[in-house]
Image (cartoon, rainbow, N blue to C red):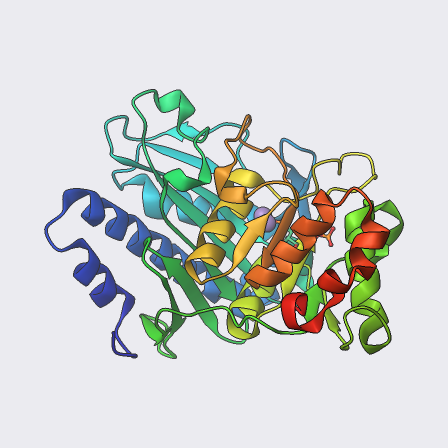
Length: 345
Ligand code: AHG
Ligand code: MN
Ligand code: MN
């Protein structure tokens, strides 16, 4: 696929004469149009009335900022006239039935990283496209494997769209005239061996033992079992962390922790972890709770939270081994585990 191709050209190639693929392509095109509108708001910020002020709380009690709700409305109107059966959003208590007979349905996190809105940091939009099941009420109770497409947009120095249609991951950037996303990275693959981890270290005292052990070993660096130094990042926007990992590898961790309300971590399964996991695996990476593959999980509730560990595959596998190890201390010091040749990730 040649770089510079527009998103619409890519979608036209994908959909050809297949009606389901056409429906997916049109939904992605509608979401991309909404993203261009949202990008205009994030670029203008306060000049467009975007100040990050609190406007309410969503079902889970999470604070809703002005742009959370504006982004939700923009996406809804972009999709509303479009043939999707059900729309689910982080900002809506329940899914909304739009066109009962439509083949596909969409779940969105309209604005990810909203704590960053008024600090001029990258924020984003995350979406997941699934086939509408016979029982429409179970649309978002399907395993992550049921996704037909997934993507996210980062409103950062560039506005970039990351998309998987089930065969690899392509990265597009919004052209300077702001009217078309153009392909910049076709079939991106996550670098395997980057010494970089992302976690909110202020929660360290609340982590489970495997996470404590994993991060302790990263911090021990060349003086510890990993025998190399690591770098740490924490942006507070899942989309920005994911984009960095796709670009240069590493691992992102938002684990379960002992704080009230965080027994399943903070991130939502249906419209954050499922789409991110689809993208990570399509780019050669992995996404896990530590105990289970994210794409195998079947949600019990729309806003269900889930621990999310994702990134370079061998790094995620290393953490899963720690979760499986009855005695983590000996595991970490075991020559095989510490051996640079085998598990140096
Ligand atoms: P959202 O703004 O949609 O609620 O998402 C914020 C998420 C995610 O983007 C980010 O990685 C994480 O919350 C940051 O959590 P902490 O503020 O607890 O670090
Ligand atoms: Mn989010
Ligand atoms: Mn959000």
